Length: 159
Image 1 (tube, rainbow, N blue to C red):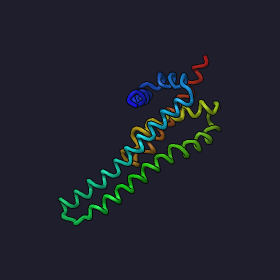
Image 2: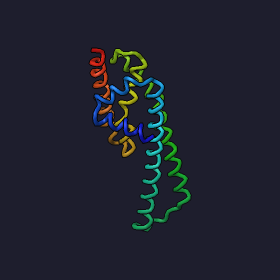
Image 3: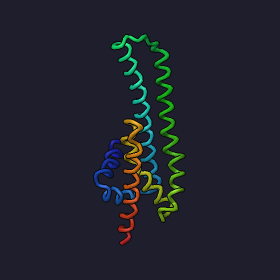
Image 4: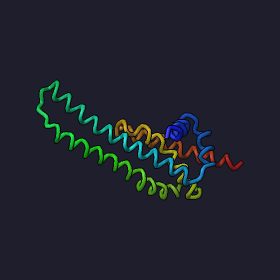
């Protein structure tokens, strides 16, 4: 897993080299890596939600003197964390493949190439989207720049 994360982070720092490596990989290996990173990102997002609820409750209890029923709070926080995890899975699978089909209009490439490059182009969202939902639109723009840059670089691969 560490190797996969390092490869995907290197894609953010050196996109040209990263997309050359992606081009050489099979669709199955790229999607396998994508699912591992997606599961990790969903888990981290869910853990962040759970911890943030518990920290806020501790603050209100210790500093403000609010009486908190911790068993109910833990139940609620774990429910929100599970909901966040499953939303990431839904967005990373169903919505991802809908986007692949929509981008068919804009990206004239084979389905396998489109899926490979779109999956690794989501790296900014997967790595930093768990921090706060408010930065996701900016991360989506970064992902789009990576995506369209990958296909402009891909046209240079053929030469």
